[in-house]
Image (cartoon, rainbow, N blue to C red; front, side):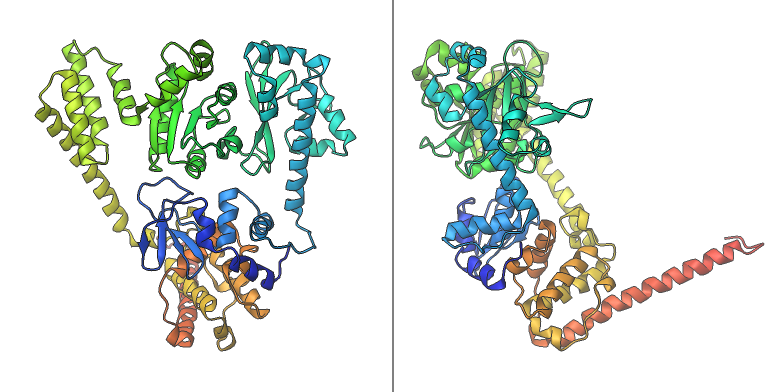
Length: 580
């Protein structure tokens, strides 16, 4: 859908980028007029995510993402341009233009409606005679009716086409059902229900939309859990089960568990901040999603080898976001659901209060691997434990835990401390050498963060960036200089940005991240914002623009000359008696 310049301008004016971003990122540190925080799009410990109140743009100096307020909502909420505009319009209390022609937006809206109707179908099936097996299973797992209603738990009948028939009666097509992952294609060309004889858990995003489903089989069979496939509205690595409920919790922390039943059981027992990943290990995207709502996470994974391994991995992901991480010790039970059933909610609450910080947990995990009464194993323990302590960022932390390792192994504290600092120095030197190698390659430094946008001719691209920067900052220059054609640009990405920018200027519009956002892909907008961060002297704008244009044409001519020389050399090689 095309939005008018006046509408987009008003939209961005009524949605200050600092206010919007602050709803997702804790902005604190200031540098000049810019505010900084931890980037919500990649893992980092040192804030490199910059928000400019003056320019109304954001830019991450770590991953390179950038844009205006609309682009931020597109990225953070995984929305299309029209959907992000609608999101911000609702936030500002603005009416959307009546015309609606965006195909993807209509398709997305239709799929969300289908998922909502499917969730209602599954929920009603739970109370039918066919749903008795599901009700028996819920009784066995002590899931009450109120909890089932709160989560929208339902039942997929043990038939081939119950859902398909019900949804077709509501006007949905087989293709729409297939596109949403609710049916599959049969060998004979027909369709059959994806979920059959399963307890159904709708996956609801933080905006309250049903985006997919997770079904647990009733009885024997594999897979035990089945999730919706990736669709236009569902990406399991970027969503968490029950976060729509957990985000409202007043507990101050998120409990991260492994399965849907654990989450349901925890909520029913009063622990309303529990969430779970959707059939995968915790992903960086899910961790960043959690960080929007809390700065503390308690890991409550299963008490087995796989759960311990998954917890270790989750700790590594979460600590990169500067989150406080604790880990439960589920002694006497395999998972939170079993623990609550055996010992009750009060015992689990005591367990939460006694949860270990992630350093204690990781150190205990290392300790459990070795018999410290055996010298050979004690040596291996000291090596692994010292390496763990050496990676801690704070010197006080390293000192405290080095002394603990020494006490556990019966070795002098000085010996362990020296070993920890030796390993620390080695890690720091490795990091410094790696950074120095990067700094010694200026051509790599100049390349865009997104490798898909790599410049084939960095020298020409520098001039192309300059042309775009000057026209964006001073559109009047387009009237005073004969501008190059898009085809003269060596970088396809810069050529596209340039053509979109020219189109806006030629129509008399003022270019901005808002008016350009609908025509530029996310990585192109990030590239535009990154080149706008570079200085440009506007006092000699016409001459500078002419110099940039001359440079790209000179580079193009040099390329033609090289091509001509190569063609001449090839012709010589074909000449009889010529040896290259």
